[in-house]
Amino acid sequence: MPGNRPSAKQIGFLKKLGYDGDPPQTIREASAAIDEMLSSGDSAKAQRAIVRARKESASKVKRQAAKRVAEFTMLVREMVRENQNFGGDGLYAGFMLVAIDPSDIEAQDRPYLNAFVPIGVAEKNPEILAKETLLPEDVLVGEPVINGIKCLVSPDAFKVTGAWFPLTYPITTEVPDFNKPKHGDENPPNPVFALIGCSFGLVCMIGALVGALLLCVITIMALC
Image (cartoon, rainbow, N blue to C red):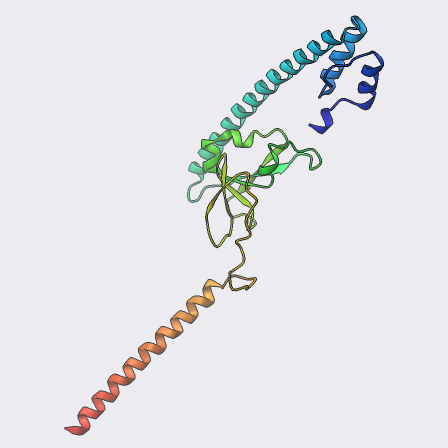
């Protein structure tokens, strides 16, 4: 994360101490290298201190991630139970993944930014909610979900909400602009107006058939 990078002062101090190994990637790694250089003055030992700090950090991150997944698993199960008790369509529709800090988003989290996670998908894949730099916000049933955003169908695939072509795309794919009709009309046809138009056409057709039938009856009566 950008906020966890070593400071310029730490890097400069390491150079003054004579360190010439691989640069540290985090504040913790830089501190471990500085401590070793102050203690032994040996770049090789400082390099090993960085590796140890990196492994310890990776192990800690995994433990924290597993804990977050367990917490979200419990949360989603409780929400599913509340939906069942509420009846009908339920109370919770799912989650919207928003940035905790818009200026500090991990690269692996960025494809999921502002994506909608339906409650069913979250129940099967709670790890989707455990992103380090994204926060899942509750979306209630009936709340509008903006057209054109990613709606996750699995941890690595999504559909575009409101798209004319409801296809599935890999999570790394940019959201296609399928919301505009091919003929260039910016607004999709209103289904109510379309229904009225179809009904009017059907009434006209029935009227024409009835008129033709009456004409035939009148003609037959005149001949008789």
